[in-house]
Amino acid sequence: MLSRRFDGRLNLSGQEFLLDDVLEHLDVAANPALPMAIFANVQRDPPRIYVWLQSGIKNFFLKIGTEQDYPAFRNEVEVSANLKVHSDIVVMRPIANQRKNGLSMLVFEGIESEILARKKRMSPHEIIWFLRGRRALRKGVFGGAVHCDLASNNLFKVGDKLLIVDWEFSALSGPDYCDLVGLIVAILADEPGTMASVETTRYLLAREAGCQLSENAVSCCLRFLAARGNRQAAQVLDSV
Image: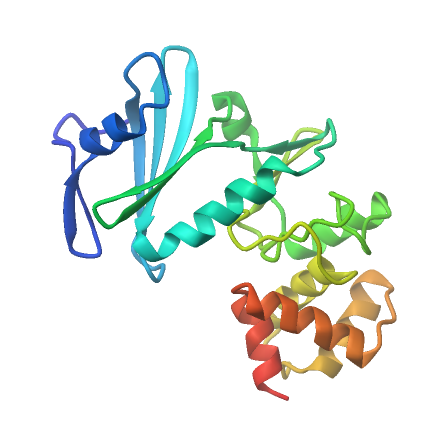
């Protein structure tokens, strides 16, 4: 819950604004949406503000970014609207995407509090085992759509369901095994003393997922991921 001392003023990249002005502009609910919690990610470049909202019995999730975040927000709306979601996968659906006075705003239908309370972060190793169990290493859980950033802070286990968030850099199609390669480079980044390269990526693909991919196939995936903002994939390509 928010502290009672919160006066509604927020600051993003030096720009001060009132949260009430943002909520009034979005107008996503019949009843006034009340902020229940706010998190500012100042380590991110550019910074981002996240707000959990409640309006009556409905929950909403709001991302507030700078003007340069708008294309990524718009991409998330377009891809999320076309995802074919299985019954055991939970995806937050965007319902409003606007920009005003140098700010970009993206609002989602919220997730029930019980799901948020029960969610468990999954490691890249666990995600790979999940994909193997569903025979989804090649095309992913959406049969072709590529998330491009299935890091451990974007995918959670909730009971027998899977919660996937943050589709800003995703695409409705991409190279086969693309998200798998993204998971492998995340593992590679956490292995001390291991040199990041296409060859070590191929070795880990075989070790972790039992996949034998050519150098060209791996490089194609890395270029696709890097072009959509995956920094770990870009680091591997920089080593070539």
